[in-house]
Image (cartoon, rainbow, N blue to C red; front, side, top):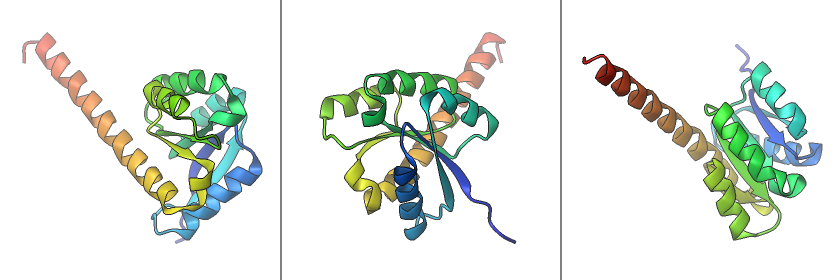
Length: 149
C-alpha cells in the first residue's frame, strides 16, 4: 500500500520555501511524509477548510504586520491545525507576538534545513493534540457540572 503524503500548508511563503520544508521533512526521521503547499493568506482558509492540513507554517516576513492577525484568526477558527511561524529576521518581539497569537513555535528560515524544524513539527503536532484533548475535557466537565452529573 502506498502511503499518501500529509498536507502541510505554508501561508505567505513561496514555492522555494515550501520545497525546502518538504525536503527537510522527508530527509529526516520525522515519520512525516508530507506535501507542502504554499498559499496566499486570502486562500489559506479555503485550503484549510477543503483539506485540513496536518500543520501550517506562517511566514512572518512575507506577511509583515498581517502575520500576527492571521495567526490569531487561524488559531481561533482552525484550532485543530497547529501553526508554526517562520522568519528570516531574528526578531524576538515578533516571535513572542506570534506565540501569544497562537503559534506553537517560531523558527528562523535558517532552521528549515535542520533537525530543529523536524523537532518543532513533531512537538507542535503533539502539543496541539494535547491542547485539543484538554479543551474537550474542560467542555465535558462543564457540561456535566451544568447538568449536575
